[in-house]
Image (cartoon, rainbow, N blue to C red):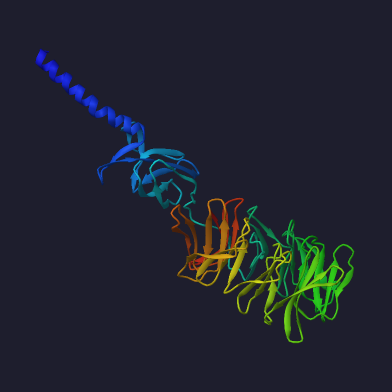
Length: 448
């Protein structure tokens, strides 16, 4: 190599040094040239955690590959969660997490210079067909108030589905005269069918109430704390019956009530007197504590009886009245146009009308709409792990989640000719439901 060639190479490497070194330094400090504006900008970092792990990460439809400094390697092999992606230019991206056997999760994210954007709760939902576990049309069904158990009748008998255990229990019942009123105990350990009480651990008959109480007894309920106590009404009176001692006790006389609620420290009656209607709170010694005035309806019933507030639902006008008996305020919170509702574990009320799903925060008193659906909504369940909302129409079961940008994203999980009677199990991650598709009818299970 002659002197001239050596000089050219020396100048070339010197120039390359002065050109590349600043770029490397700026890159190490978190700066990049934005090709859109040709400006040097501070970059941001994206951290993604999914459940399950191992999901491929795509930004704006492109796989994020492994990099080392300014260079990438393992071309066309995307990074997988959990992952930390550095040196991203400030921009709005579409993030997609993809895993075989699961529905892709898409959401808009915003990367800001000098900051970490963290997606730490990307729950992926299995992409799997529902399994027909009990074939045959159900003639009657009833879902427990907490949405965890289902009673149904088919040509093979009377059954209880336990969504938490994933089991089917056949009841010791040959035939039922009336299935109009199915009463569940608050702990789901017992059920009343046609005034016969069954244990839900073995399906065996415990007692026939008609042998011990009046045959015209109506509005039967279990005690909220002791499922060996049953209440009932007849002829303007309210009674309690002890399954152990077989003794009946009169609680109220001459009280014409639409409904009643026996709580731990007080009893509440919905009454009409002299043309006025109200919820009357009594002590356990039958002393009147307070009256809460209500519009006269004739369609009142207590719901969500395990909630700390008093929940009174007017099924005719579809209005929910909430009373906090421990509050110094004597006002009643009123929520209009409710087809169904459910309290979440974090103390918020999810409720829905025919086509909208709302959420109510009793602390702030704020009501916010979550989404609108084009088909009539039949049921809604909320899973706090992943902030997922499952809902059913007459034909579909779907789920939606809110991305980090606040936008709602939908996934249709089931599309049948008929869907009803949803049970949601967070414990075993399954949805149980009655479905019909073609000539296949029965209870289906869907892993999520």
